[in-house]
Length: 87
Length: 147
Image (tube, rainbow over all chains, first blue to last red):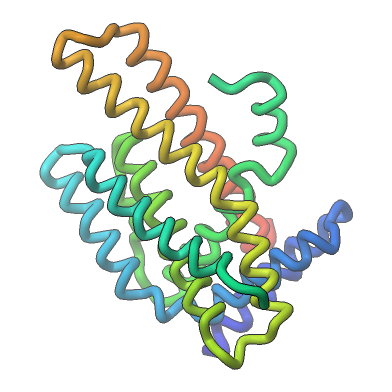
């Protein structure tokens, strides 16, 4: 986990060097850093996505509308959860 | 097609920059875990790349939602996650719409109800989105690597 904290800090430090950075951007970067810290939890989903893409390449086919819509449904659910309620 | 104003927003504003930032965060984590390939680099065609990009964005969004639901997450961080998602999702949805427009135009042409011109327009639109996203991700990766 320390490696991911280091990575997050590196990312934030590199981007914070931008002179145009605003408080809004800083808030967003804190969100990115948090996602980096929990990154290992996303490993199974990344493996699954990678397997799916590699299978498409092997089968020489493009993703279908249904496959895109499946991702959209997941995005909508996550978005609804993120934006729900007052924090 | 984008207007010049839209194009300027994508290039000079956050545009796809924020979704790309979220995706690159996951990619950096992926590389740190010792995984040599990721969905984006595995993809070959524009639609496969769009699928990988959008899929990685969805994974980030799900991780953010999970973090927001965790009781001991600081309120400031929950607000930051909400803000990041609210700003990133429209661009991600625009990429998705470009892919759906392209696949619909391809299907219509195959069925004899579409035109090559329409397919060409949607393909150009999709390629613009992917190129912009790849540029954003490359810039961000270089920033992370200190180049």
